[in-house]
Image (tube, rainbow, N blue to C red; front, top):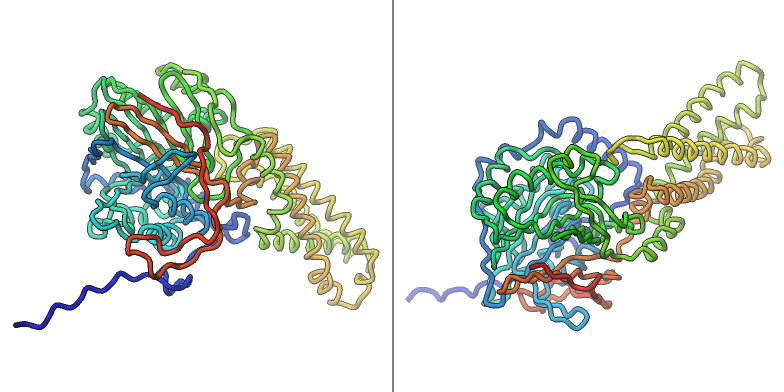
Length: 569
């Protein structure tokens, strides 16, 4: 007889909230106004805009498998989850992942089983894509939420499309995570896709088509061919869910051409089949909203973990496609009305007013940068105002003052319409930006007057400069941060820098995802699920079952409906 077989090793379960035990590093929320991050993200955005076509890997995906996926469901139909914009701070990302991994949720008295299919709608990582960022901000938290399927259960499937942040490395890390042929799972979820876009046949003549729009660019030929082949299986009785990377129906209000790619796809690939496009769904804007029109719902649900984006400036009515575009000439515009949003407008406004406290707290590096710039501005003004040593020294001090004034005003004008915002620069951007800059100049002048009336100015060189850095810099940095907060609040009310107003605050609460059920009779019911407050304290569970979450919440993590369920037939 041979030696007895060794007992299989039990799956590792961490006993400490420590990166070495977890296998990944739980990350803090991205401080979007951190100076270095602003520079890096700005450069990556510019490079993506300039060279995105050269880094486009979608053409190369033609050599990968082009399978059409099948999700037949059970006798009870199929449950499907949708989440987007998730790979940010650990607490928010894991709170949503934990809820998605639960075998079922009871929401407002209704039992909702976990999705057989989890669809991720883009921006699975922030601020920029890399292997390490995906491990820490996405893969690690989702593996911790569901390490493996329960015994006797089939693994739920997970599919994803990339958003603009996934594209910042040319899609390299995304394809390694989601398109791998050997490691085809993320924790207990199985990842069957091989490309950055996919089609899924669902029960009862429902289909899911998910596009890769590469930051709003054209659809590549291999992608169109793939979807045309999938569309050959559609007919007049087919109903389609179309997942896209961004809610172009909303963005087209300010930039009408935003909807052109989606309109082209519907017009040339789906419409000829006679299929009904019943639902368009996307992330990108970090909130939940729904527009209702003739026979179609337009849903934005980007509440998977990234900072909250306000809802109080959403238009109440939109036309899709916009009436003043070329798409309108070939596709009939239809009116849509805002039927639901989360958080509601009143709560969104209250969040906006919180910028005065959250901006300096969440972005200390930004306040430090402002303090440094204002200190330099004050020293330049003080050198001119002092004029202690005659005309020659006056001219020497005047040069940096002119430079600082230009940097202050032009920097503020540039901030009013950064490259990542896209679209045209209108007069309101110039007016608000220049006014913002002039307010900082006025603050610099007031600070100079105060400084010249303090004794530091008369100390021997270089003590005045040291005192300015130690005393003046921190105080003026805080005051300047509050000036920026006030500017963002005013500008946001006029539709300018609304994204920066909320990005500066990094609000982790008010998260959302959508759970859908396709019944055997073909009725699709969508349950928008709201998480008013995320969990911020977690307890390792080393003795838990192999399939249970590694980390359990130490505080309540309640859920509710963001709005009443809506049905599609």
